[in-house]
Image (tube, rainbow, N blue to C red; front, side, top):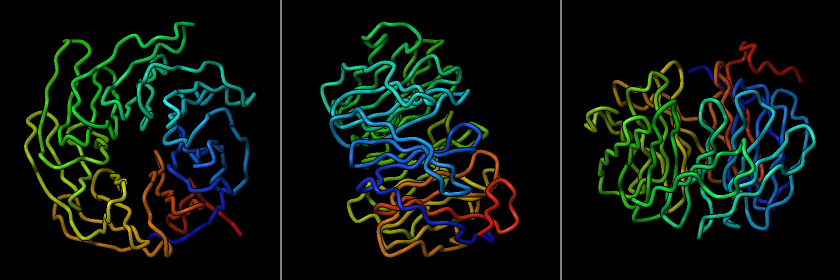
Length: 303
């Protein structure tokens, strides 16, 4: 893992709560405690647009499949659907009884799926003018912390220690209980495994079909923060932020730590691997840090 620091972007929006690439990795979004979303070119550090309209901290955001729209989730209990080019809200969706913690589009970007502190997952048809959720899943017993949305499945993680898989086609729910609060969830690119970051400082690799625990990864510090994890290098490596200002990389199969990146002195809590290249975005305090291979054209930066 020959990764080097490429660029540091001062987002100037209070604390950066989350950093996300768009679908092809050409731009990224930063979600701030200043109630705004910012759109960046991560290769140059150029600020492209600022989106303001939430009444509280923005916790998550996602870009649509054609990069024309953004959805954002805020502690003000609302979801906003934005026009990327104009910077204006197209629709404000209210229905959650608590702060919205996570947001994702489906593959066609016709449905936005949100998770909330009110323990529910809500589906919004954002292509119509309907302002109510078209479906609300109320099985969670605690805050919904992350979502994975595929063509016919919605997978949620919760602080109640369970992963719930909703099969939209079959109308079925499968619940796998880990028993430890789950703070973040991602899926391998082949869709066969889930990676669950847990509050006990352990990241667990779980078989998507059987719910079987396949592996565990330790060595990062959590310290009561929500620390995100990811899967890189074509599903061969696991990466996680850490409370001591680092990112740790493990071999997926061996479970052994292979690299420790020193990002800075503050907590590294959010990260986003490039969809096709090797670049990785890390959020620490008010900065986005761009790391990658020195010769990777996907995020090649010339200072």
